[in-house]
Amino acid sequence: MNDRLPHEKGFHVSWDQLHRDARALAWRLDGTPWRAIVAITRGGLVPAMIVARELDIRVIDTISVKSYKGVGSDAGQGELKVMKSPDPALVGDGEGILVVDDLVDSGRTLELVRQMYPKAHFATVYAKPKGRPMVQTYVTEVSQDTWIFFPWDMALQYVQPYRGED
Image 1 (tube, helix red, strand yellow):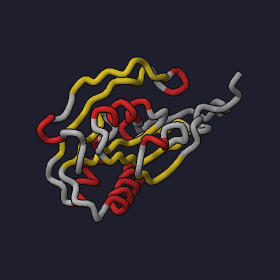
Image 2 (tube, helix red, strand yellow):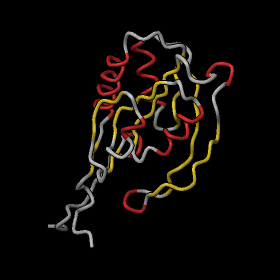
Image 3 (cartoon, one colour):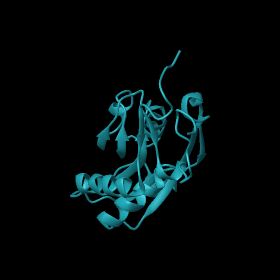
């Protein structure tokens, strides 16, 4: 039985925080002449845009890997499926390519993409311990049992106090 309230072990990331953390990721990646960025959709799109702006990288492509199903405690990873690949002429074996995602959790998605582009550099804004070996650069590590609530998953609305109404 889980006695936790829904907000416990949750890491809520605001748009401002994500922007600051993605800029910090760019600063850690500065100094390498990247040929292009490949964003892992959907979560990697926003961080990749911020990193591209900060590092003045104009060539951006995407790879779409579907793996998650469900939400919150009902979430899990299903079978990995590449829904869309980047331009093979651009990416090749990954040499000079920066692959960006919002989070590495189990590492399964990055493991699949790493097999496709073994010479690419993998960077995420957030990393969990199980997936951390799959990424070379990240900004913040969170515990494996923490659920990250990204700003694109949230809406501003009234929430009733957990003890009920007055």
